[in-house]
Length: 432
DNA sequence: TCTGGGGTCCTAGGACCC
DNA sequence: TCTGGGGTCCTAGGACCC
Image 1 (cartoon, rainbow, N blue to C red):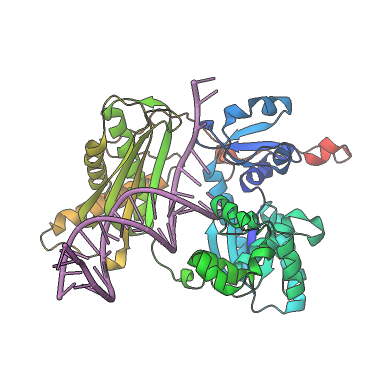
Image 2: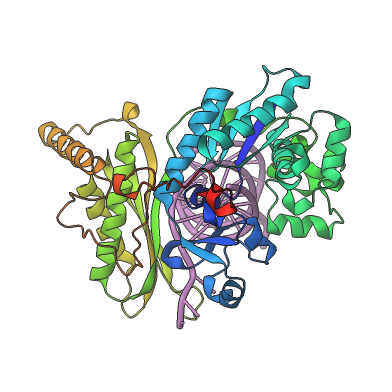
């Protein structure tokens, strides 16, 4: 048995911990430059707002229903996520974190009839200790656990934890799940499956195995097996290894025309990628740079250049230099650029590192010490980038800037709790 | 006027080899 | 006139996930 913990409306829930006045109100969290909706509360969902929709398209709904709009505060979300995961690690076996708001746990050691109570106690403890509401799905496979978690979220009767552990429950759950709501079946596939008359997860799960092989691919076969109770996703993935790629990319608030400005942006992203490589004690041997104009306009131009680096590195200066020279090969003057990104690939961890026979080892050692000094200084300040390489600008290029409140990591941002008179039994008094 | 960011895996097709 | 068979590796693009 496996369990999937999923934080409910995670970004919104993080905000609500520190701003209780936002409870039960429609709230949306926006992405970079306040462009798109990246998360919303149930109340906002009920008003028809969907993930990914640009803000300018829903201006009237937002003002008509007095929806609170927040700019994303990812450092807060990351910190809250690690609190959820730490709590979870203390409560359950085999924790495997799969994203900022999701993790799997191993339930093999828990007796079947104790599972509902055990699940509910996990949900309750996380809510109590961290303040974040979560849902737990328990089932023999990850795909079924996802479905169970959806039920746990949807129906209050489950008290946050839903268990699928026999064929009756399985059939019922699959029957109530639309084909597009199955994990691994996105928009394209669900269109295709519906065209074949498969509308629910049950329709799909009941197809004969031979048809799955003939008509579809290995991914769908795995989904099919998982829906039928055969665990085949996630076993080999739990082997630890370094990430395969690491990206930093941004959309600009305004169009950028010159290579100098793009150079600044690309250098900054490369520096950030380098810092993350060092944090994971990893090096990369290739870096790619991506630029694009506004994809919603005609005369769209985008291009990627990949550069191989002769010796694996995580040195900011080297990666910046490589990124800039890659940019020079794809930059075309005359376009208004709206987006750029840098990706480190062919990542190897510190152990597998092989140095070139001809490199200057003393110089390498010095550079390494310089980089770790830089990281150490920057890590001691909550505001990033106190010290940086001179050729890299510290200001963001053509971006909307926010100064988010860091409720959990900056002393001056810690919330005040006003003590009111104990006899104050009004609603406002209780909330304070 | 205004359209996010960061990942993974699979597949088809080309280049190359014997 | 007729143009094999089997394999690997790499890359770009598509699809999916949160």
